[in-house]
View (cartoon, rainbow, N blue to C red):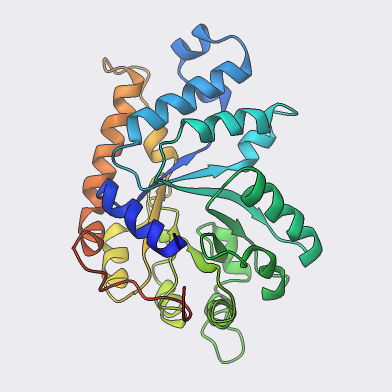
Length: 294
């Protein structure tokens, strides 16, 4: 199955464009969980499995932030492997790796994240040139989400500045990604921060077929109403990521922490429903291949 079809199926099966981010920080986990599990391995696994259990019916995708597993030391990738096994089939698995290197190094990253760990997609930096993305683009069942317009304030130092005839460097990058996508069977998508609503319109317009991975809606308070307006004109399927907004809990609440996670998930699914509804029909009117045969 092509990545585009798997993405559409995942959104329709969950009824949502919600993407759940897994960013395990042992010290920030509930006290009761830390009391039950004394090893870091057991604690992280228990936390991730509980998050997955409370989100699995409402989320189309899981974005696994590799930094949080790498920080666990030599056992981090073994823990990651077990977390991936706990995610139900049919979900889009995104390695939030933000790698970016020369092609022969990226070949090894591709072997690690696609071939060995089985991720469907990976986040990459395109700022060494689109040739560095090519090692990931040989398989139509896989995808790259290229960092195009990030949600952090530092994006203003480079990404939002005018570049040549383009209104921003991000818009120029989007045009390059679109050209690259036409030449390879793998799918290229874009990471666009929800906090950048004043300038992301022209970026989307430069690559209207691109699937989007959109962080910044939860803890960073990106505007869902602004997203809805711009996505109404966008052909590619979005995944809207929420990480801290879903995993947040109030230790003073009378509700168990995992029930708070379930409530957070239901709330974000409801908030995103007007966007999700575009992709829940019977036909495929909004999805367009990036290149012939994909």
